[in-house]
Image (cartoon, rainbow, N blue to C red):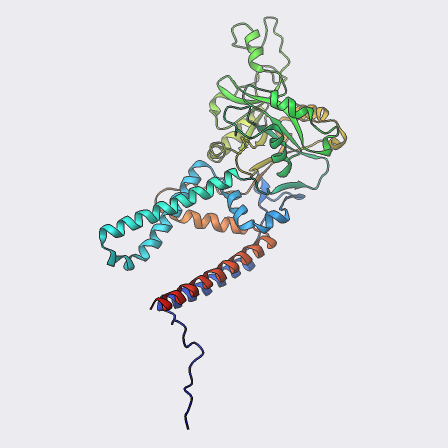
Length: 439
């Protein structure tokens, strides 16, 4: 009687190596940690009052279905877009540190290559890693993609951007027309946007001509310009150029004429980054000669940096001069992320004409000053550490980022991780099959 040899079900398959077994265990650990974070990590609103840091009732950040589907990528791009220059450098330095530590942990396998070959290989690996990070940054800055939009429950609140640009500015993106500026503001939840190109109002006027008849029927564009006034960059709301008034005053040292009269004066917003020692101070009781508002949030990386460093000083200046504190995008056509929004309460604004709303926005800032605007900002880290602490910044930023994910976003993240894990396992099995076949 011939007995059949009983073979295990795994016969014919290449055996799993110790490395693969360890990798499988670490995958399970990573999955357990990801699920635990998704379930246990407290969630908080990604937007809050820029003054108190507290969540504002009735103010939320809305994500479209398209945004949610790609949330793991779009959310990271958004988080990167609101970092200052020191923070970008810190994140890049931290990522490089983590990458080098990872490569060092794998150094045993490189001994057989020889020192020179190993150094060349590791240099190439580092270059590819840094290049990949920079490409990821660049793609997020240039491609059209869904945006997160601010939504305010109170219908009498108008959401305003006081400082933005088009291709008419020398530093504006070459394809960023006034209508693309309007679309950007619509998609990020603004009701009104001032186009303040450098020394030009043509694009703003053309866009304003295409405004809806009722302000509440669509995103409204209002004219302005950005000029250098008394050595400072200011956003001028409306068409009056303060430099022309100074020039008409004779020697240009004062806006007050020989009879002691104050001129008709536009609303000026002091932008950042600038020298806060040179904030133009009003010369007349009605504010003529100076600024009426100052940016606390400016969406450009350098502006975000000064807002972090000199936040308390900006607020002190606003208090002492009774200036409105505002958020501005300083949009030039790059990225698809708003860092802050200015909220003004104007009852009935939706049924008014765009011109009426613009007039009331300016009047509210003139009359109410410091109390005119509520600033809403994205929650963002403000640490800018150096030395070995930089290596831990990506992890700290990641935990801060994860805490702002809603339940739906967390489920999408877990789905993406599951798909990535399945793809990785299939790829590993395929490699084992090819290796066995080669033997």
